[in-house]
Image 1 (cartoon, helix red, strand yellow):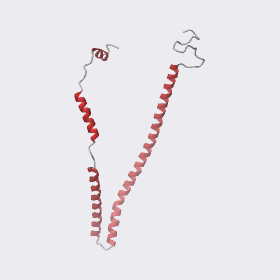
Image 2 (cartoon, rainbow, N blue to C red; image 1 turned 60 degrees about the horizontal axis):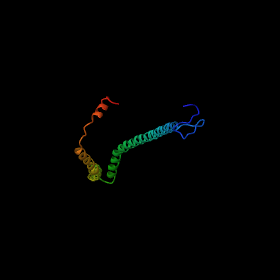
Image 3 (tube, rainbow, N blue to C red; image 1 turned 60 degrees about the vertical axis):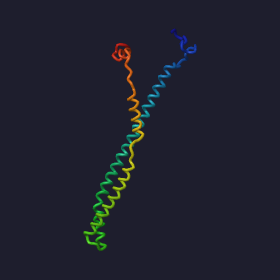
Image 4 (spheres, rainbow, N blue to C red; image 1 turned 120 degrees about the horizontal axis):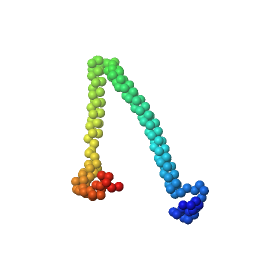
Length: 158
């Protein structure tokens, strides 16, 4: 095309100095959108990484707190037993009462767990969906490939 001639796909006018074509505008918009998506992904990764670090830190703190609490149980048990002895019971009965209290607490927690487990139901919607999919697949008949599809898959045709 000679210099200064109008592009046949345009509206008949010559492009101005510095004016970009539709293709150039589309390419720039695509590049900008791609950069925006990459930046959003990088931001999401940074935020998630920071949240994971906080979660790990909180989990470690919770684990240490659990170990300390667990280590205090025998001390509290001895204190309770000796406290009962100070009230006038013999030492054997004091320890037996503390052990019974722990067994009672364990039984109550076990009953609560059992009640929670009984509330668990089968995933009805998932089972129905899987059965519906299986029914559709049972009734589906494969279509034989055409010679053109076979040739294309084998690279005989473009």
